[in-house]
Image 1 (cartoon, one colour):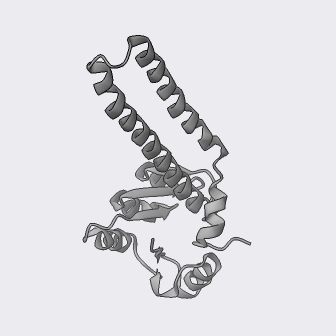
Image 2 (cartoon, rainbow, N blue to C red):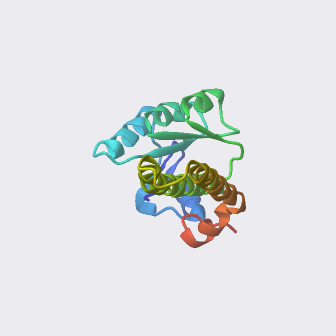
Length: 174
């Protein structure tokens, strides 16, 4: 993942913020106009790369709408929140990383459950169709499979997005 900063602020402020959150200075563009932000997002996506845009103001709305995923900061303007796909309730950039980690964890859980369900169905449906599995056992196996998927999903309650955050080092948090 590459992190870029597109801001309407002056270069000095942009560099200071980028340094604070750990963004490579080469990926910082300051004094960018709203339409130029949208153009920059579209340029990143031109080769098929997916881009997420985080913003909080009216000037970010075109770029939020252009991005694959637009993330509005909850304290932002109504226009930005409306243009975004996701709205975070806090203004701390750390929560963007947390949201990404929760999203990745959720997708991982979904994949695990799909693999389990596909494996179960691939193995047991032919057995039941051929009459090699008694109906009572098939019903019990189906219930066990459903409980297994549900139990695996409930394990997500123990997921801590901060664990990956500390390891990823994408942003520094004091």
